[in-house]
Amino acid sequence: METDETQGTMNKLGEKMKQAGLPGKVVLGSLLAAVLVAGAATGLLETNGAGYITVKQSLLTGDVSIISEPGLFCQCFGSITKYHEAGTVKFAQMNIDKDAKGMPIVRPTRAKEKNPEISADIEVRFNDGGLGWISVMTMFDLPADKEKLGLIHQKFRNYTNLIVTGIKPTIEESVVLTAALMNSGESYTTKRAIFSEWARGQLTKGTYITEEISRSEQDGGSISDLSESNVVRVKTENGVKLQNENPLERYGIKFKQFQITNIRYEEATENLIKTKREALQQTIVAKIAAERAKQERLAAEEFGKKKVKIAEYEAMVKMKKAEVSAEEEKTVAIINAERKLAVAKVTKQQDLGAANKKVELAKLDKTKAIIASEKEVTMAKLNVQAAKHNKEAYILEGQGLGEQKRLIYEADGALQQKLDAYVKVMTVLSKELGKQKWVPDITMNGSGANGVADGNAAAGFMNLWMMKTTQDLGVEMMGNKKK
Image (cartoon, rainbow, N blue to C red; front, side, top):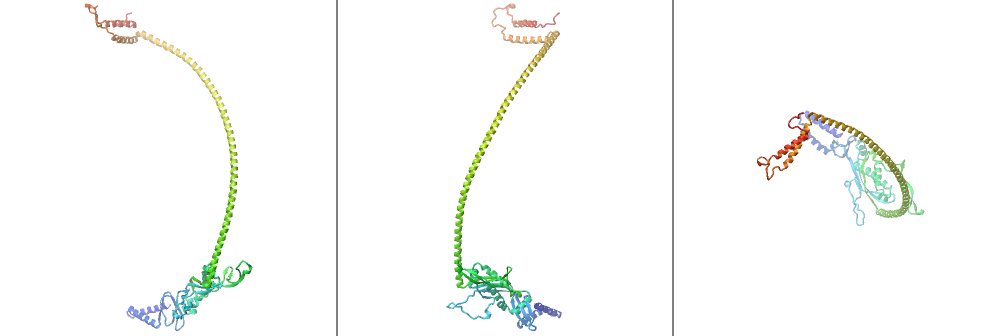
């Protein structure tokens, strides 16, 4: 590379100056500045800017060098041609001044003022004869391969020729051939998006191979309205569209962007398109109205059918309800009859059960009575036996008590019993005597000594009563009785 060679030479020069003891940086800087000024003035040095590719042809040998890296290189008095790494080409409607009669005013222009990347929109003719103008914007890249860059320079010699004789004709051809594959009405409506797709495909892969065919078109409703027309279509092979070789492919030029920005039509064509569009809209409206009427008729028919179906369904429902009701009544009658029969059987069983229960109860009562009688007899027998035993017991007890008393009496004369009786008698007597009034309130005559009444009459009475009691009880109060 030229830049690397120049840099290497400058580095070697700096090393030699250091070895000679010269102040390298100052001298080298001054020398470099002088060389740059002299080189720029005399065609010795050149700079490649960013985004550019420089083609240098040697003055002596005629060899071509490609410089794609930005920086300084040795021109060495060779010829220099610059190319853009990427470029844009635009076809657009030009603002052309017109005279009083409406004719365009042509003014001479200098070549330096003309920009090769901008041109007027492309004039095309559709297959129905309509005339139009297409505005396009494209972007392309030059190859990085130096061999192909050399081939581009060898073929086109400069960037302007590349645009004018290489890029623009290829774009124009793809657009013109695309317009020939459809009529103006289609490009305006149904095939507007397809137009851009077909044009891009022909620009990047090559133009389509076409053929002309004859096709009958029926404009009216009778056979006399049939007319013949020639139509251009794309040739295909096994369903694949056939295409010519892309003239820019061997140069390595790649289109990165392609866009249809506008389509203009001549006034007659535009009026025809508007007329067709209005007619189409009216046809569409008529079709919609007819379709709506058809739908309404079908809806009415469907509604009538629906009402018939509803009536049939309601009748069927009524019949089914009657059948179901009759079946239910039959089922209810059967159930009621079965229920009555079951109730009668249950009642009969209950009556039999009640009778059997009564018999069982009678038998049970009889058994109870027999048991009670037997129990009473047994109890009577037991009572007799108990009475006999009690009698014997009472006799034995009486005899025992008599014998006991006899023995006690023989032992102490029943002294204790007599004393208890004596105490009780004397206690009662004392209580009763205490209730009497023994001292008279008035004494009329005395019978005691000296004519005075005896005041111990109560004591004398008690003594007499005690003596009587002891006599009755057989108690010897004064000592043992002499035998």
